[in-house]
Length: 121
Image (cartoon, rainbow, N blue to C red):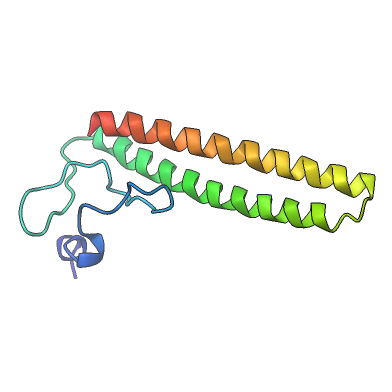
């Protein structure tokens, strides 16, 4: 199986759903695609590698956002099981604040990367 036949496989088909924040983009999201039935991505120049890097960064930011949501849940569990202990309550609040700040940073950074890479598309 060569690279061309692998990229023409339906799992790698162009036009993935990235309008939803929870949907992961493909590594070739911002590359220009060839016209035709296979819709395979093509590297037109060396500068297209930056578009691949932007897509990988966006994937990593979305993974970090999912992890931040996990930490929000973890902080909520810590807070609800602190039983009034000021040390544990403060630690839970700190976890919640850090997780929410991290989530906001991930969302903003992902939007910025998508905007910048989309302008080069």
